Length: 230
Image 1 (tube, one colour):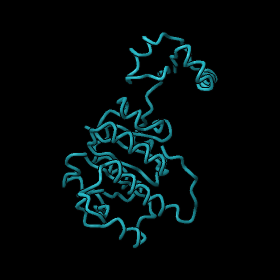
Image 2 (cartoon, rainbow, N blue to C red; image 1 turned 90 degrees about the vertical axis):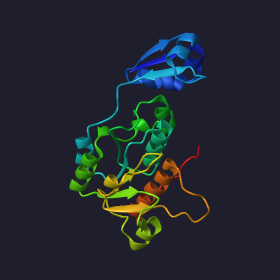
Image 3 (cartoon, rainbow, N blue to C red; image 1 turned 60 degrees about the vertical axis):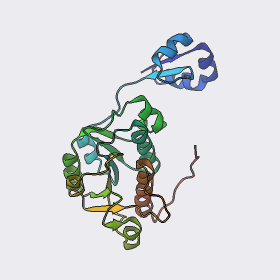
């Protein structure tokens, strides 16, 4: 791992620079123009880190006996992918799976939208959706497809007490959702109820609702830690 920093940023974020050195990262002081060239933001903060890829094999996720997994099926928007990764992390999910034809996990917008969650939980990439579902079911995980036209209602699932088991949620493409062949792979197709006049929820919002519903059901006898919004 390497860290590039302007002199001003190295002084301002001395704790980050110190932590990087503590784990053996090489720290380089660089001009603002160099930081601007290697950064993807319009107004860089003066620090740019370089690290190895973080994704893991899908088999490693299955071997960990996951209780809660988010599967992104052909999700193309990097902001949505990063936000779902952040939501999965916050909800205490064990892993995220990006199927083939989904956005690059390391797209700069996805990385920024995840706000560090890339480093917190295992993510597998490039897994065909059929393989993902087959593997998860084989590991004893109930697979639910999130779809606005689903036959089952999320509230009803919670009321019936069916959400406390090991669960994987499949979330589809922003524009066309989940195709019929993908919905057919799931154990159930579940919709988030719309109680107001909104036509629908966007992908990241729906994912947050579903993941937290599962997290609450799975942790019914436990508690949760406080969080900071932002």
